[in-house]
Image (tube, rainbow, N blue to C red):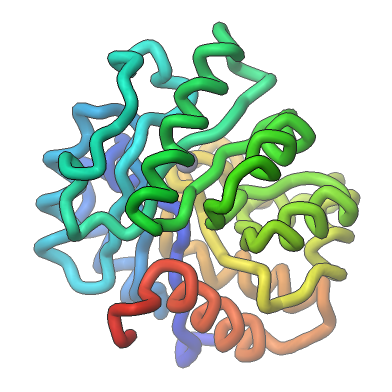
Length: 255
Ligand SMILES: [Zn+2]
């Protein structure tokens, strides 16, 4: 399994415990063949650390955004495209969350502000959708922006609705749990060309690692699980998802 290459399309190097052990976490992931990483922003104050980590480590891409859980830290203004550094490869993490929300209306306005920015800059969105697939779908249908629904969980019909809008779906720890039958079935059926691998580290621990911080080095385990669900080889999963990662985040860069 060590010869295959992988990318973690969603990992929070800006969050503890990854942040203070970032060098070690990065090195261990590389040893497992995980060589590219997309780091979403959660808080506006994360930007400096993530920018300096991304610019000094090969294969590390970063996004610009405010997580829906941090919506109260938003100043309520539209994002200015000129304030986004050219090294940014995606917009997010943004989206809607029906499980943790305190102000769904504010979250929706913040989500719309991210979408407007993504369209202006022609960058993909990193979308968080928790118990809110139909609301997220309703918002995205009104816009041209594309991207990824990260840590997707839901039905085949919901998945295909996102895919028909041009979205990728992020497969993470959820699919490693036998009880997540609906989501496992969805990922066994949707086109491989629409799937990205992710960990959402330090969140979404894999089955067998409950209670531990998740880490990017576990992407190959997500790939193995996806391969088993689909009855294909890990190599096939690696090849397809590597191509998908390049197509979404690195197109136009010659990678
Ligand atoms: Zn996240």
